[in-house]
Image (cartoon, rainbow, N blue to C red; front, top):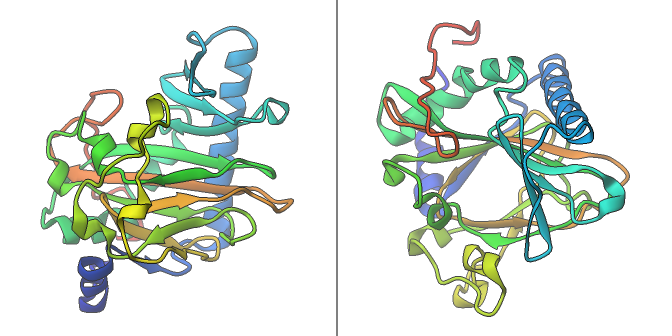
Length: 266
């Protein structure tokens, strides 16, 4: 159960991704939303009382280590909002249950071809109304600096809210995973080396506009990005990446094995 279908595998190999609609029902989604909002609040509170690492500014983007997570702040200081945090599951135990959910890890195990998995990364993306875009990029070149088995890392995104073009949903450029690591942007500051020069590809981008509770599974090298949230609603997403068992996580260099028998959805 939950294994990848032949059609999904074919799309993943040809286009670099596939999606599943309404994987999580509303009741479960609400619990995950509460967990990520709790994590967000804890980070804000820790920063307010000075329990945080020094603020680092790189190309006008602000980063800070808080509660064991690398926090990236929104560009607009008036929002006082987290743009992303990674890792995040250590801040709220409920997120561990999501990581161990076979509806997420089993399709990844099937793609990787490995029965036992460990966590590579978990990341919370929060795009409040007015939240800024994120440039085109690939995960592979970024992860190459810390992955022990990059070729067998697969990533996914859980939509916690409806993803629409208006609220800044994920966009991908199908088929670009076949190029491997593409050239980065030139003359774009320090972070420019992490952004992909999409003028080098002919494929056209498409929005991954899916209802809340849906999941997208992606190859590490597919080019993707997002636009500004022009709506009045939040656009939140929980991103996970899995790898074979026995390897350490991307950020904290600790091993976190996937527990196979903790969910009623197996």
